[in-house]
Length: 335
View 1 (cartoon, helix red, strand yellow):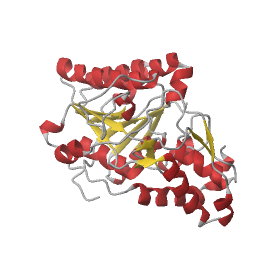
View 2 (cartoon, helix red, strand yellow):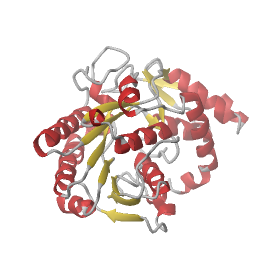
View 3 (cartoon, one colour):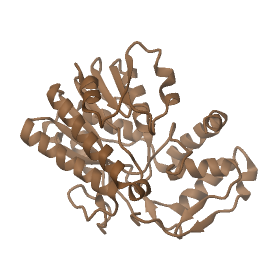
View 4 (cartoon, one colour):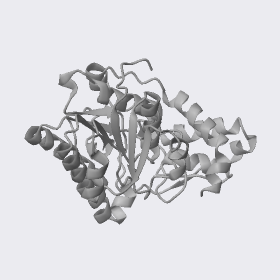
């Protein structure tokens, strides 16, 4: 990944102890940036940033984006912001729409205000492919969306609207990245709202039958974490003025069904433990709020940002499975 990424700057990462945020903190530190991490550890984990705490260029602020004072403190003397903090999960938002709204909308606006007041140069934020809602067309193109199918999807679309207004009204430059089913190292396999790949991996490793929602023919554009880090760094570093104040699909640009995914995971894990090959796969009812198919067009990101994803679903799964296998004992200890 040889790009002219920004170096030697002071950068805030909200949700920096989370899955994507912690990987982003590492990448920024590798580029000799000073990194501020703001996290309340509601979903982020201290073990994700444990190895960063000894780095003199890394600072942790334990705080909540729902508290404007925490946001202001975190933005002091900061040049750029990556806003990763959010309460993810469609099912969680359906069960508790109030908390999802408070975190994802009120917290987002708090961060926009704090960034604006601190005269931050650029605000790059995590958007979501859930914004496409009931849009039928494939691949998904940024300027064609449907009606949201969950409270979570609504909150992430509202983020995009607020970002647009903060640019047109206050001059804050923003870029939104619509993440498509990101997976990879440090993604939590435990908990009620665990993402599908780490959850399936851990179930296979424990000889427990994973359950697919529906018939397994729903499809997703699974995107390895290093592709997502590349997109974030490009969004932060671009000097192309036409690329600013836009939203971009952040994906690989290929579609994989859940049936294809789970067979691939089982086969890769069976290389470490042949017994896994015999674990049965089960099927259950469809899940409320799920989009049947998701596939991104990444043409806009390629054209305006120079995006070039380096990891396919196949190579990404190889990396992810290897990481989970090596870290099994540690993950089990923290379960």
